[in-house]
Image 1 (cartoon, rainbow, N blue to C red):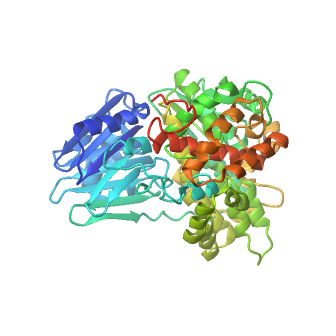
Image 2 (image 1 turned 60 degrees about the vertical axis):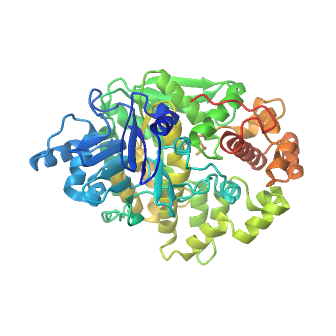
Length: 604
């Protein structure tokens, strides 16, 4: 696992390359290396997981093929054997060292042979210099880039703060960014909150040449096997797939741990991992004091059932204001889910306990129909327009409320330009697939990588911890895509086949408990007298909002009044979302010393 960066047909001094590497060193503290030539550079920050004494990057084949790689290739042993039979030799057994030979054999098609999570950059100096970039099928390892079409310059990096360290990449906020963020909790698709900065989509292969420019293609996914129609058969197959993938993903040359929230998904992964890992350590996070939705008792039951050495991480809400600036900086752009703060603190604890790898249950809800919004969309009567309510459920701030919070000037801009919510609504309505397929493809293809996987990647790697995601493995994703709707959502049941797969493996209390989100209880914490409430008031002070020009200070003040008098989820999430956005502006878009108010600094 690593961080990568580079440029092609562009300019950057060795000092810039060192600055870029320094900005994402937390994600690869074990080595920082780069190589460069006329008009190109590739760099790497290494987090050593496989072959701790090998794995030196950039990888090379001769003098003409140079590669940097971020992620894990789970089928590297198989690939090494096949490539060795073709005459290639390898100086170590690190997973990424197979990529130069794989590229030499298959050219631009090399990602089709990779099984894992990855972002890869290849410079081929044979003939016309060419750069290839590739991302995995689900988007587990993000890659951000700035493409200057006029000059044909490309810059890229695994994290936004690193990319912005190139002097030719500007940190200009996108005009439509605030509305897109509030409508979907973070920008979807290839867009970011910065003008001129994008993120590669899942399953992308990029080709860049000096003469031909930049071309992005999306690799087609292979077809899934025919779905099982009966619940017992489907459940058994899901259990078998997960057991295989969890066991395979525990292979590492460093100790592997498990994140155990106490819900179905992480609990199932923990129990399966404990079958393979002797003395597995599990981690759960909770908050000092008494708060709603505390899951520590469920996590403890799962740990006892699996026989893990359990770590109960507890953080004090009084420390949250000082943590938020670091969280926002590592993410590089706003994410409105309060779970970001919990995630950041949790992986710090995993690292401090001596672990560099953690296995998690992320993505099960997207694959198997676990969200309320999916059930409500499926329950809508045939012939009715289910799309608006579904799109509204994606929002951090409901449309009527967010538009009331905008200044008249910004509301005019949004009305004229069109909102992100309207664009998503039109695309979902235009789908010719059945309802469940439409929902599944949107959840997996757009929301999962943008909202979920980038958050998990950045906040785990901020602590130098690699997260492995069994539910994101191609075998699981493809099978989940193939399942009939009634095997996911049926009557009052959600994730129907996954619960059936877990039957007998988990405590009954976990299987039968009501679903609750793994997140921060901000409605309780954003109240007068609490540290977060006071911090939000400082960040959303009237003079700051008037200077920004996009929000109506009087309406924001009304939000605080409502939350103080009648605390509720609607007002608290709106306040939280605006606070995070304001903090992001401070971190990236406001010259130091020009913004009123005291904002914590960032430790990199």
